Length: 155
Picture 1 (cartoon, rainbow, N blue to C red):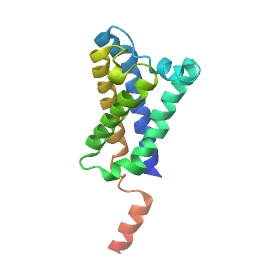
Picture 2: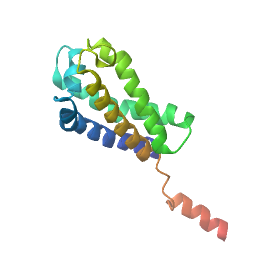
Picture 3: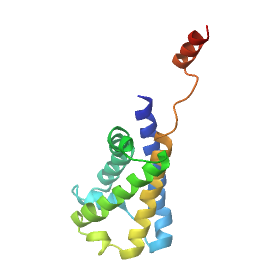
C-alpha cells in the first residue's frame, strides 16, 4: 500500500509541475500556453473544467497506478530513470494518438509545431522523473514491523 501511496504522491507532484510548465514555461518557448485542459475538453463536449479534471485524474491516479503496478517493475535502472522512460512513453502516446485524435495532427503539426513538441517533451520528462523518484523512494527503515523483527533477531 505504501508503494501505491508514494506513486500517487509522485503523480501529484509531477502533475503540479507539468501543469505549471504548460501555463508558465511553454509560453516562453512557444509564445502561447499549452492548454491541455482545453485540448482534452474538446474531446468531452468542449468543457475546459472536464478537460482539467481528466488531466488531473490521469496524472495523479491513472498513470501512477499503471506505472507502479505494471511498468516500473519491468524497467531497468534507477527509479528516476524508470520514471523518465515512462514520461517519454506518455509523450509518444500523446504525440501519436491523443494529438491526432484532437485534430492537432501527429506531433502537433497543426498546434504549434516543433516548439510545442519540445515543450511537451520537457513537461512529460519532468512528470516522469518526479513520478519515478517519489514512487521509487526506498521503504522507510525502522517501521514498527522492522524494529520488532530486528529486536527479536538480536534477542
